[in-house]
Image 1 (tube, rainbow, N blue to C red):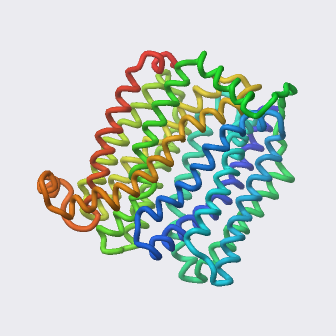
Image 2 (image 1 turned 180 degrees about the vertical axis):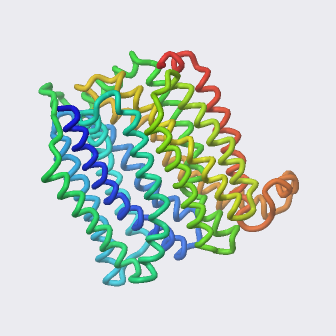
Image 3 (image 1 turned 30 degrees about the horizontal axis):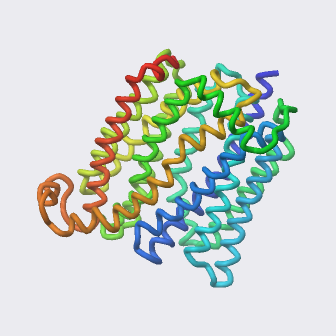
Length: 425
């Protein structure tokens, strides 16, 4: 029975990966489009910010709902609403009405759907995958996600040249239809829906919070991951693209190569995780991997002056990530009872990702109004920093990578040494 369910998961994983490729191509094309309109890192940051803010707010309400309803139905409805967002962009584009603020609104709606879809998908994974294969499945997910990261920029560039943004949106909608049909007709997810009712959605949330108060190791792990997410989102998610474009004289090929290398590092890490035995020291793996990612990735990204070094930094930053995700997922599935996984995963999402929108909006603001003007001024410590990161447009954003490398490494090491987290092993 378990083997049959795991085969169903493989089919689900493959179909969702195809849909993810379509969505990623659309996202890549829209980021380039938005930056071309404004040439502002902040405008790109706001795209992700709108998505994460609604995601976090609605994650507060999602847990109880997910535990009480069919995970399959939740996934189908959430994916359908997200696909409608791509359809809306396509419609605005056809009529010549598409503006950056339309993308902000659509991303906000997609953030709401993700607040329900992602915890439902996480619970569904626990239903379909045997416990001893959770770590391997995390490696598979990292492999597919990073393969998408490698392929989507190149495919998006190819299809954009062949048929423009319209063709990319059509491919996105086609990939959604494929994944939707596979989930609807071929995947059966075992359910353990709770019968207990609550006076409000927040009452169910309180139960998830109460569980984490008792499991202090899990709570501290999530809080420290929130800080790590903050530092990573200050740079990679929102200023990496503007920095590469600024420091390469707008060379989109250089940007594509760096993104591809970041995905390649994740693929290598995902393959290693899916093949290796489960580590006995999972907390050390989580925060040791994070420390290496910041130390090697961010610092090398800061001092790099060309595509070769940026690509090396991208591999160094992304290769450890699958090890973080696999060890964390193994701990969560073993520590959290099946009956309350939806509520606890929703609380986890709120805690662990609450710093992401702050990092995104702060990163865009700091790049445009603090670090870039400061490095352009040539005053004080800027003269010293020129020797490390170089001069010219984009040097301020390079200094931001320097800062996140040091801060992220420090937080990771402190987390690794915390007693409650070490006891999770």
